[in-house]
Image 1 (tube, rainbow, N blue to C red):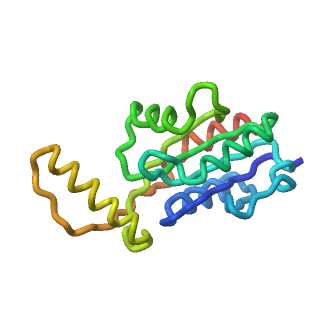
Image 2 (cartoon, helix red, strand yellow):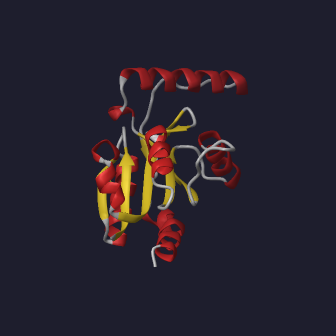
Length: 171
């Protein structure tokens, strides 16, 4: 049986980048969530899943939770990527939003700051981001520029805790 598999779902590329870095670092297999199946998952002991946050929800988390239920003997580690500054209380909020009490939960959850890539977003996502930015500015009583600027905050150093945890569990 293989030890570690990294699964991901990525809209704008940040989750895929982190997933590739994790797989490279751990020298393990990497599979896009859409290409995963029961046979593939059954071959691994520990599965790392990553997806971007959209309105607080981890992209692909529903399918991942179905897999987690179906394979409770596996060690599941989940990471989410987003542009929200990484603070301990944010990580807890993202976890509780995606894994409610009584639901299947991963062994560990990590939040990795990534960024925003407007060029790879669909029209609806860009419109939603503009609306949320407008509402945030209104709430704060400030004026916001209507220009949407992409920003890449990914950094391999943000993976240290996740990699340490996976190495420990995959022994």
